Image (cartoon, rainbow, N blue to C red; front, top):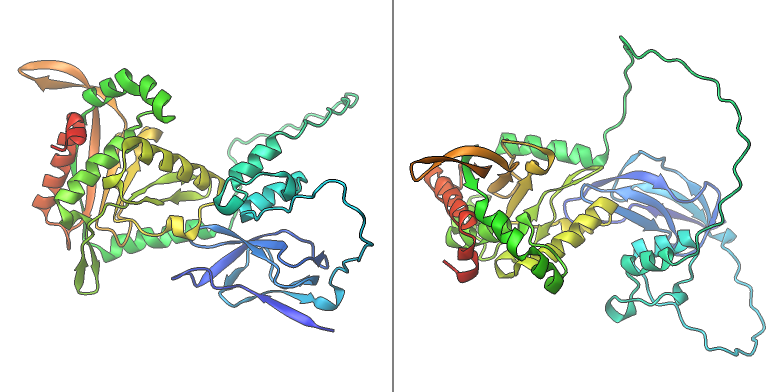
Length: 397
């Protein structure tokens, strides 16, 4: 009997442990080479684990187990590898198209939909089938015929009284939630974090979007989003004040001549902050398109480790949930994070008159070891100035 041990492979720098979140095959099943057998949750992403050999699998780890890199996942008896029958060659009347390579996410969709890879045209590099290609092919499948309704069966009414309930339940935290907890505590304990506040009049940004959104969307395929304008304003301020764009490494300060801005995206599993790189060099529509792709990947759990790595500054928008003001926590090793909030009409004094204006509170949390108080205030005032007069973003003032 030839037994092959399947172990957790190296996944990425700084990742020492994963959680086996889901088995994709039954214990004792005969699996093929490269067939995905389970899913791992790492600190940053969910990954499929393909079988390294063909044979009969004996599961060792269970769903929910935390496994170190190199930890034993399963054993495979290669004596039970599926036998590939040799068939007598037959004349081929129609040339067969070889299946192009597919991404792991695309392979999963095609497998679950029963679609042969050879029937899908890949739009990725060198014809690679992307997740979008697989989803488009799956959407073209005919809808199954609806089954006839079953005869109505009277269902007994269950009367429950939740009043004064004392029930509790215990659930193991997901790996992502544990990672978020650890990083937040680390940021509070290991940085000299302070927050400065300001407010911005959103009148001109709202007028800009109202005037140009329709034409902009027709030309570029995306609307003028608040996040792209805020990111461009921050990137310009970061280029003018490189100290805010720096971080501590031992006894050194690392300065960046680029603005890789991490955007906080809420998912069912928790908050992720993938960066959009070189924001200082992107147009608004280029930024919006990249953000749209990252947000979709975040919601479907298909962000790669590379897409989750890096960033020199972070923006988080609690306003989409109704937050009026908050204190964002630093995203280590970065030294600053901007918090956006809800837009609310408030009375403000302008030229001796009290008028209603759409206002937003801004919060900049910063590491006081890197950024002085005066620098943090100056940075936030500069961002406010660019947002209240967004034309400056386009003419470089």
